[in-house]
Length: 67
Image (cartoon, rainbow, N blue to C red):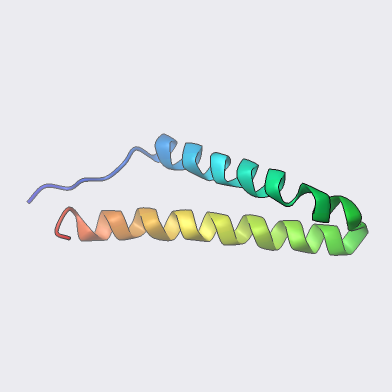
């Protein structure tokens, strides 16, 4: 059985790209926010994106090319 997993650095690169895209497309809205509201929205966005990337990476490891 073969495993088809991506290098961790490639996963990190995808996460950085998604975070950059998210922050760029939300810049107008984020610029209107101040203080705790801005921090909460940013933290929730970052956590969501990292969770999606980590889940996709884990799913790829678990499936091991079986899908």
